[in-house]
Length: 118
Image (cartoon, helix red, strand yellow):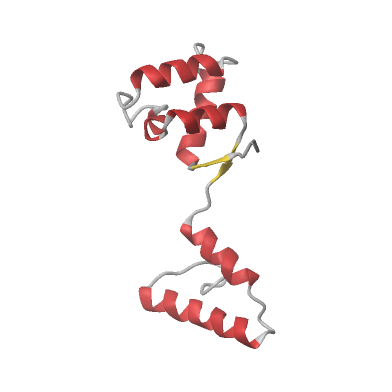
């Protein structure tokens, strides 16, 4: 079985790191965080430092703690990556680049490095 890192939001990463570094119950004790998460799932206020964990299922939390995690890319990052991967010197890719720019302009969306100068 291949161990794959899970993708988490910035808020979820911040909550895990806050728990593991600042809460005496969880510091160097990921098993306790998993145990408490299983007990109080859905009861954690979204307004406290661990609130972002309430949106995470138990399997995701376990994999994040024991396998690892990466930051989930935002839609803006995904569009920028797609745009930058297109070869401006290749006619078909250049047409796609223009289509991306036109679509963003029509929608009134500005993305640095795509349709807004950095």
